[in-house]
Length: 622
Ligand code: FAD
Image 1: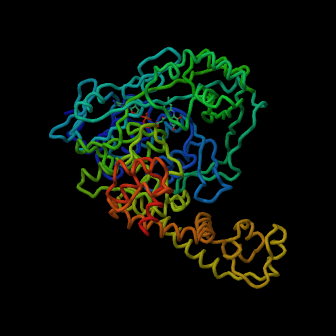
Image 2: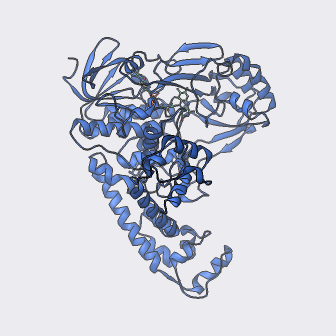
């Protein structure tokens, strides 16, 4: 036996899923081996140097709240922070960080090296050791066998990876990294179904060769926030991004490359991410648009490399180069690396239990891109859940499953396992029917108690949550009782164009007005500022959200409880789908074909939207 008699959990791959899986299992007390092909690329950001964004930012907050590491590492290594969608309701607020690519990877490696119970081995795993339909270890290229009670596969884009640049194709898991062979073939022999997907990345350029005066500057937030609920640093300085545009000349040059495009010429068979199209796809599909936005994103604090977001391409490198140079500000651009597309194997996730354990082989877990998802955040949260569940299995504990009403993570895994996916799955707020409850501001309140009872979230986290809960309740009470006289406030209300009051009112009534926010109200009312001065900013924010949106939140909680109740509600044979004009065409077809047993099952059929489920509920008189 090599290094160790037997590990509790072996994690294959140190991408975003693998790192979270290894950290979670080890922090819960499992003896973990992390086997990865290249220890210099641990937590490599394969594509854009950024974490979070719409719905993805909420996931990072949830990972953090449960006791995962991605949020902490993002906070320590970001170069810019923005809270997206601030002008919309709080359910849409989404944190996004521009990351320092090299620092992000370095910080993850340092974190894992400092985690007790994690051993490392740099090599390619070529197969699993399976006995009686149970995985008991992995085999490597050198022929070493490592024994483990559970195995988590997080191979990302590496399984039979095939890179395309124009007419050139070569095997690889990512630019300049080998692909992984053997695992898909063995899993197919074991009865697994495998599929093929593709994704792509833009060229990287030398920032010194760009003329930023021809672009629009995009700065970070004036008061940057952060991802972790712990005491991680906030940014004191930030690097700006820039915005520029393609133009008809750029499009004409790109079109010259179409006949050598691996996508248009049918050499790429796998389906790509619909919402992350290549630039050639954009100009082909939206022929009437004469420009597309390009975000020019620095790759870190101390590198000149720049990521050209929006210019993903697998056209020949010379076509990419010539087209780039026609973009405003890129006239003298020097290219560091060309864009490329990659095809890889994935395993339809309907072959998994909700714990991410495979249905076919016991104690074998899949997490990340191998399950047909795309994105660091989607991978990280699956890794965390697989790591937790592998640990729990090995230690005879209960499975850990999050409900759709508890977390975006619950929505993601439920979608994958019950609906499957035939194109790279990324998270959107619209996928979550209870998104009003699943906000980035309350992930700690929703999930830290669960993470703490698992033994993953620390006592410190739990203590912070308790304090936030107590303070929030106190502030809500205070706002509901705090009386304001017309003479104190009418001048300010007139100033902001809000109706004046004629009798004494409570602070809560003013805060419920759409144009009244707490910072401005406390500036106008020093007595209120004084009363609230002792409270934590996050408790203040939470209390304001609770009072402003009280009615919506109450309704949503009731709806979530009803949905849970209806989860097992039998419907087979009780509904005539043809007589429901309000159902979407696709939903009606699928419902007629599948004839679901319960409302819960109906709701998870691909093509049956939350709106369709509401229609069914109306017909059921619920
Ligand atoms: P990865 O980050 O791919 O990590 C896999 C890890 O497993 C690596 O460390 C690798 O060395 C290791 N490994 C693989 N096989 C073996 C083996 N047999 N033995 C040992 N170690 C192994 N996401 C987006 O959201 N938007 C995009 O536009 C986008 N574009 C992309 C473009 C490209 C070219 C690539 C490569 C990826 C892109 N992604 C994009 C996807 C994003 O990189 C992934 O979703 C994310 O990195 C997946 O994380 P993961 O942990 O599942 O796998």
